[in-house]
Length: 188
Ligand code: SF4
Image 1 (cartoon, rainbow, N blue to C red):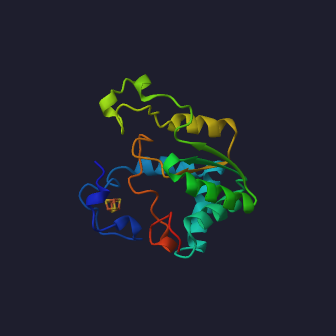
Image 2: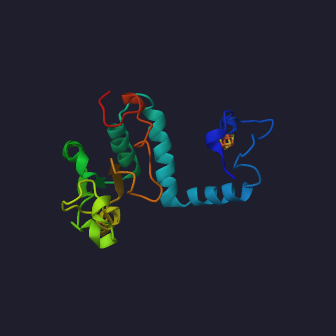
Image 3: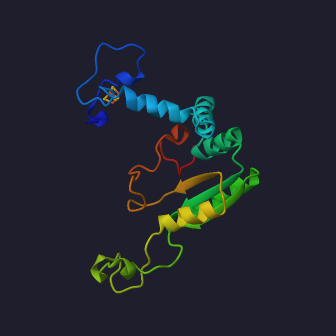
């Protein structure tokens, strides 16, 4: 059982604690947390974890998400960035790509509709389409990932992918852009 969403105590933030709340995943899972820590000690993972934490601290509440990405990438020595973006955010992708290139990064990008594979190939019915009776193609996050892997990007940025895009989907598009009041696409 792991029920952090029902917890109002957030004891995991505290240095000392009297006891764990009901449904806390820390109960009896010491081994899982030790195994996780061992993963973070691997040099390539440590590079990401430490520099992400340093970036967060350095620009907390001040830097936009894009500034955070650039700072993090610089600190982690990630020079080649990948963008997996939604067709619906094409204009934003154009601007982000330009900004990142201006900052000195090499940028590769892949849109969700790449491959132009019709929905019928997945057995979808006409009535399952957004606009029945029209040609519609599947969103293709697997191809996006494969394309960015093929060109060997150091760090990939997900821009606005929809609910169907990953088995572990983000229902709030990457919260945490405190400078933009948790709206990563907005200006500060
Ligand atoms: S880890 Fe435990 S203390 Fe922390 S939020 Fe989850 S349930 Fe609450």
